[in-house]
Amino acid sequence: MQIVKDGSGHRTEIAEVPDDEIGEGNVTIAVDYSAVNFKDGLGVSGAPGVVQRFPIVAGIDLAGTVVEAAAESGFVPGDPVAVNGWGLAATHNGGFATRARVPAEWITRIPLRFSTWQAMAIGTAGYTAGLSVVALQRHGLTPKGGPIVVAGAAGGVGSVAIAVLAALGYEVHASTGRPAEEAYLRSLGAAEIIARSELSESAQGALGAERWAGGVDSVGSHTLVNVLSQIRYGGVVANCGLAQGLDFPGTVAPFILRGVTLAGIDSVNAPASSRLAAWEVLADHLDEELLEKMTTTVPLDQAATVARRVLAGEVRGRTVVDVNA
Ligand SMILES: NC(=O)c1ccc[n+]([C@@H]2O[C@H](COP(=O)([O-])OP(=O)(O)OC[C@H]3O[C@@H](n4cnc5c(N)ncnc54)[C@H](OP(=O)(O)O)[C@@H]3O)[C@@H](O)[C@H]2O)c1
Image (cartoon, rainbow, N blue to C red; front, top):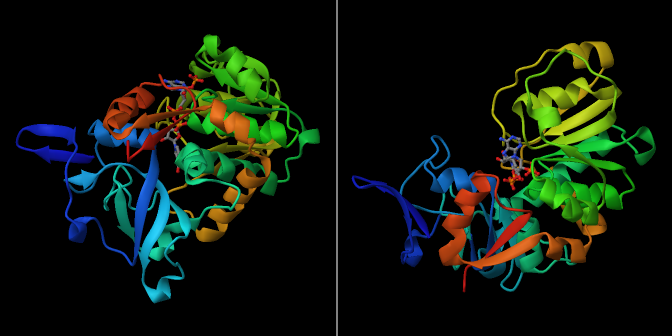
């Protein structure tokens, strides 16, 4: 599925791409599955700065099997692999396709525990949740330190973060704008549910009561500011997203008066060592049944519609795209 921008506007369409145009790289992959992420919503909707060349095959994630690989790539036909981010669907054809060609450096070897479907059920959002959990752990946060708040709880990053943190023994407080998802969030392991409105309004003061030892925030804007203002002394918040907004309308009070750390999370260009650490946390602590529960699978021709719904905050958990359906 391509994103096209021409004289008649910006649109998506299913198209045949000749093999010599699928992409630069030394590894060719038969794609089994892709996934729908928030960034795919931005890309198919024409948000500025996301897609940097047209036409381009959409899809920032892919998982499948190596079919051809240059000797120096380190891969051989039959290897199960995944690609998350890098140039996919930005500068390079992406994963909403049956075949992809990419540089070997972009490829993650899927932990043996996961099938290609599971790798995409996790996808960029889940692997970013993994990066976020690793950031909290590296900062020294342990389950004994106190509860962790997850903002944007019913989304992709939020759902995986809750499941992994709860499995690690943390007490997880889930902030959601969808009260109807309370049972779902509790089934993932959330101990408390917080109304989104408690965090998403403009902050009343620079600091609030010390509520949480840490946070995973994929929302940004007022939500991130309010979370930071209620983090306990010495705590840490991992921020990866901007579902509410790109702005940061806060003060430095949590940093300079409570020694709070704001850990920035980037999945797109994360080095191999960070990716490995995130996938290891997921392999060790993400329950397969919960992953299935939070995931819906759709055929390729529904991917663009779902991407727009993700952007609108209407999709629960994760969506896998079966590119061969
Ligand atoms: N830095 C990176 O490398 C990286 C990687 C992956 C994702 N991200 C970013 O992380 C964010 C979340 O990604 P995702 O895949 O989890 O998306 P998602 O599935 O759409 O989840 C986002 C969640 O945020 C909440 N939300 C939506 N609009 C909101 C608003 N206006 N105010 C407050 N909360 C709102 C909703 O949760 P509730 O319904 O539960 O309230 C929604 O489910 C996106 O901004 C994405 O670009 C960044």
